[in-house]
Every structure is written in C-alpha cells, then in structure tokens.
Length: 459
Image 1: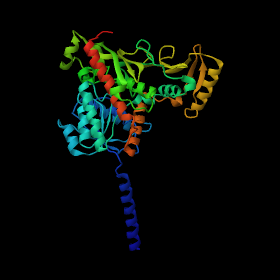
Image 2 (image 1 turned 180 degrees about the vertical axis):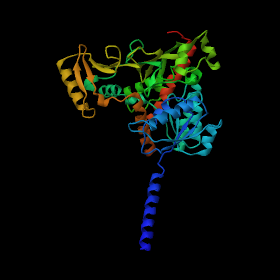
Image 3 (image 1 turned 90 degrees about the vertical axis):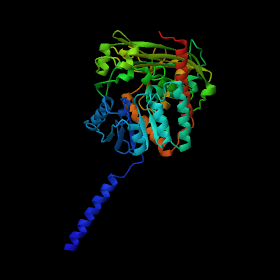
C-alpha cells in the first residue's frame, strides 16, 4: 500500500514538473522594448504571438513616456475581451541602453520612440547581435541615411533582420487598389505622368489631437520637436513613399542610385497654441527645447511636406498635412490615385464618403465590354476577398468592401509583426525588401535636404 502511494506521488510530481517545464519553455523570440516613447510600441503588443515569449524586457529612462507605455500594456492585459498576458520586466537606469546590450535578455529589439537616437540604437543593436523591428521613420536626415546603409550591411553579415513597421500595406482599400492595378484588362498600364499631373499621388491628413485605444492620446512634448521626431516630410511621409513603391512596382527591386530622382520638395508649418499644446501633452508651458519654435504663445511645427519625384521614370507625388484636431465626426484621411491607361483607381475619404476610405474605379472608356471585363475580374478577386462587390456610379464604379475585411489601424501593427516573425523564422526576407527600404529613406531624406535648401517654408 505504502509503495503504491509513493508511486502515485511520484507520478503526480512528474506530471507537475513536466507541466511547469512546458509552461516555462522558452519561445524562439524574446522581445526587448527600448525607450518606448511612442504609442506604436504598445500597439505591437496589443495581441499575443505564438513565437514571442510572454516576458518582455523594457529598458528606458524613468518618466512619463515609460509610464504611459506600461499603462497601455496593462490595459491590454486587463481588458475583458481576449486579454493579453505580457509580463513586463523594467529597467530604468540612466545607462538603460548599455544595460540592455550587456544583459542580452532577448534577441528581438523593438524601437518606437524619440527618433533623434533611433538610428544609433538600430546600428548598435545590430552590432551586438539583435534583430530589430523599428517603427517608422528609421532615419530623419541624410546623416541617418548613411548610418542606415551601414546598419543593413551589418545585418547581412551577421544574418540579422532589420525591418520597419509599414502598417498601411494592410489597409484593405490600398490592398485592393494594388490588386486591380495588376490586372491589365482593368487598369491597363501605369501612366508615366508629369510633374503637374503625376501618375500616382498619395496624400494624407493627420491630427495632433486624437483617440487611441478609446482614450485621448497624450503625446510627449518632444513629438512636436522636429529635431527629435523629424519633420513631416521624413516622418509620416515614409508610409506614402513606401506605398508608391509597393503598389507601382510590386516585388521589384528599386535601386535608389539609379531609379529615384527627387524633383521638387517643400515644407510648411502647423501653428499650435499653448492651450492646444496643454490638451495633447498635459504640460502647462512649452519646454525649453521648443522655445526656438515659439512666438508669444504659438508654436510652429514643421510637420507638413510635399515631394514630387520620379521612380523608374514614373512621376509620383506624396504629401502629408498635420492639423491640430479633426472636425467632429471625422478623423485622419487618405487620398490616393493611380492613373492607368484604361482606368484610374482612386481612394477618397471625404464628406461624400462619410470620412471613410472608399475605392473607386473610373474607366477612361466606359463601355459595355470593359464593364463586363471588370465584373469578371472582381468576381475572381472575391475568392480571396469574400464579400466585395461593384456598385455603378456616374463616373464608373465603387468597390464596396464588407466590414469583415476592414481592420482598424491599430490591428495592422499585429499584422506587420506577424509578417516580420515569418521572415525571422525563415531567417530571410524577399530580395526586394532591403533595397526598397533604402530607396524609401533616400527619397524622404533627399527631399528634406532639398526643401531646406529652397527654404520653402509656407504652403
């Protein structure tokens, strides 16, 4: 009897030991978050991933940026529906970055914060053997671009992957705009365009005052300092330049030395009053590092920019505008047009669209044969995108997209991360990704240098 009890106890202990071993089994990737000053750092962790360990190492200076980040993670852990279970291990010493390098408690560094040192962090992380997932922009000036070239060289030699977070590739209207542009019977071929009538135009409007995860976003004061965040022409513009490349030349390598020619670039400011600054930062006065941009109680932020350039001989235009706050019932907006020889593909997000993105197909020749061809093409695409349908308009067609295919911007961060994890598991990326990242940042930083040279401050 005693022998049987001992055997049973042994089996129970063995079961518990095996269960604990399974629970503590380390996953392939251990995340390290460095100085998470931007809310995008938290959005990467809005869901769990099968290949990322639940324990996350956080290295950052103590302060409000860090606390806001931890509060967001905590809100995800404690939400009612599908809560996450991240375990944040935090180090806040002044030597936080050197400590991260020395500790080596993970293998994947996440960077989303103050851009002034981001390129330095990218380079040092790669030099010390870490993969890097970096929020845009990875660089904010020409000197940073030179560092980025070095970083990609080091990544290649050490078999590490450096990648930036391009969420807009997962916006359904943009995906379908790209899909239709790849069907010659529907789109024809991309026009070459001109500087006054580009073949592709992408414009976006953003707002300093906005809601994220259901709450008014508190922005750090440095977000409005272009020496730390970067000017608009090198910040959000990164997304638009990326989409031009991704849609016009899908999976094609772009050589920035031969394929990009920046023709014109300009920048202008957005005025932010002290009371507006208080509403978005919770600070009662402008910090000293912003004083050079302040006149009386108004600060001028060079958050806006426009680039006219050619890419493989095709004329493109990208433009970014930041306002303080969107009118009631509206939000950030996007406009995009691809001009084909058979049709223009247009994304509009204005009053007529109730400020929601809508994709239009506007044929250059609207005849019965073309319409039949378009209907068949959309039916074929609908196999992969179920529920899409065409609705006739005066100028052509609207592609109606069901809500089931519409993910919010916040959900796109998980999609990018999942895509990156697939690259990591295969320890390789498509051949076009790295050269096209370089082409993208060459375009934005060259445009900034040109805009500063021309000193075109006002819109």
